[in-house]
Amino acid sequence: MSYKFSPEYAQLSEIKKELGPIKNLATSADEIAKSANDIANIAKEEAEIAHREAEQSKKQASFSNKMAIASLIVAVISTLISVIPLIASLLN
Image 1 (cartoon, rainbow, N blue to C red):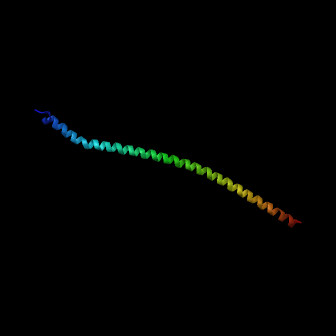
Image 2: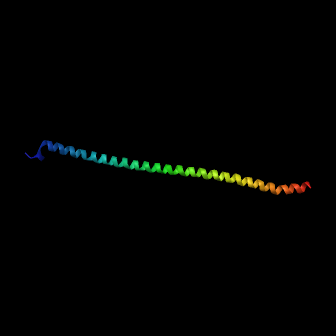
Image 3: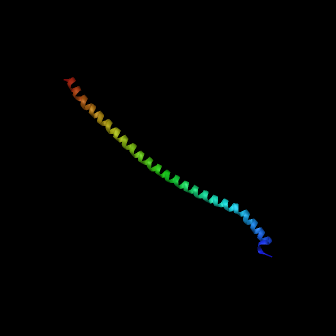
């Protein structure tokens, strides 16, 4: 009797047919997991970039605040310088 016509061969062939879709499913799951991992890595990199940009924006805002205060001080001093002679002339 030939090996291909034995009951064991038929059972193994049937098992192999049944395992084919499961193997495909496992391969697909593995590919999905790899894609999800890639997406997670990209999201992590984007979060790090956003964090660095936020820190840079914070520094720029602080600098802008300091410049605004300096401008206000200069404006007040300029106003005082222009008002002092006017007050002096009124007192004379």
